[in-house]
Length: 110
Image (cartoon, rainbow, N blue to C red; front, top):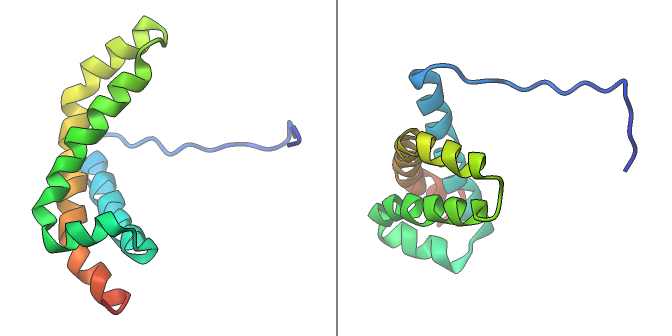
């Protein structure tokens, strides 16, 4: 790895609920396609029972919280303060994931 002080990193901040939710839906749909292409066994279960996609946030959000245990207390405080927004974003992601599964399956010839 090399350090190059001439390189610049640009971050795109999403502002507003509409932009945030559009991004979550875009990532959910993309995840359905990429996971279908990868073809793990668990994606087969989700193709048979797409409503289970709504369980993914129930797994991910606690995992994030557990990962923050032992970090500076302000990180956990920020996570807890943002938890309602994170949950809404995760549900938008899950819905787009669920909706993207049939299209993803047909794209890979399944």
